Length: 396
Image (tube, rainbow, N blue to C red):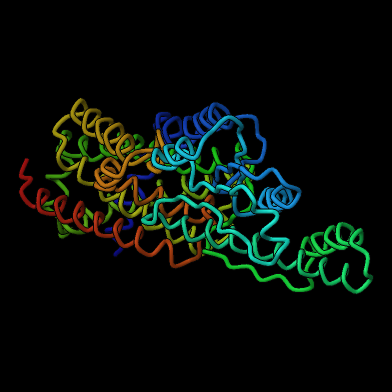
C-alpha cells in the first residue's frame, strides 16, 4: 500500500503544480455554471407546473361559471379558457400535446345541476397518458363539490321557504370547500410546488459543468502518465518490486482524489446558489463518489492509451464534448425526444446528471440515485478493466 500512496502523492504534486488544473477543475466550472444559469434562468418568476386543460362553456349559466371557478382554483390543473374555440379545436390541441385534456360544459348544465340530475360533462383526453386520470379525478371532484353545494342551497331554500335564500346559501357552501376541515393530499414523490426558474436552471448547469470540466481536467492527469513513459520513469519503476497494478492504482487514486475534491468544492458553491445538494446529503455524496470513481477510471484509460501529450489532449477533449453533449450537460435530456434520451444514456454523464438532478431539481428520495450510481459503477469497472488490460501490454 505504501508504494501505491507514494505514487499517488507524486502524481498529486505534479498535477497541482500545473495551472491548467485549477482552470479546468474550478475556475471554468464556476464561470460556466453562472453563465448557463443566468442565460437559461428566465425571469426568475415561479413556474406553473399544473396540467393545462382547455375548457369550452356552452351553457353560460351562473352554475357553469361556478364550476369554472372551482377548476380555476385547482392546484392540479391550469384552466385554459381561450375564447373562440370549438370542441374540434380542443380535441386537436389535446392530440398535439398542447393540452393535457379538454372539458366541455354542455348547454343546460346549470339547470340540470339545479334539478339534481346533472348532465355529463364532455371530456377529451389521451387515455394512454398518465395525466388523464389525474385530470379526470380533479374534474370529478370539482363537479361533485358543485353538486353538493347546490343540494345544500336547495335544502336551505326549502327550510326557509324562501327561493331567494338559494344564492347566498350556494355561495356559502362553495366558500366552505375552499377551507375544508380535512385535506388529503397524494404525493408522487416529485415536488409539485412552483420553483424559481433561476434555481431550476442552476440545478441543471451546476452538475453539468462540474462533470464536464472534470472530464476536461483529465488532460492534466493523463499527461502525467504519458510523461512517465516518455521519460522512461515507468521502465525504471518496473525494475523495482512495484507491480503494474500498484502503479496503476497509484495513478488512479491521484485522479480520483482531484476529481472528488473538485466535486466537494463545486457542490458547496452550488449550495450557496441554492442548488440543494444537502437536501439528501448521503445521496448527493454517493452520486459524487461514484461519479468521481467513473471519471477517474476514464482518465486512467486515457492516460494509458495516449502515447504523446498531443494524443492526451485529443483523448481528453473529445470525450468531454461527446459524452457531455449526449449526456444532457448542455441541453436537458427531458427536453428531447425518447430516442435521443435512450441514446443519451449511453453516456455516463447522463446517469450522473440523473443522480444529481433527482436530488436537487426533482425532489426524489434516496432510492432514486441507486440506478444511476449502479450504471456509473458499471462504467467505472469497464474503464478500469480496459486500462488494466492495456497497461499490462505497455512495454516501452
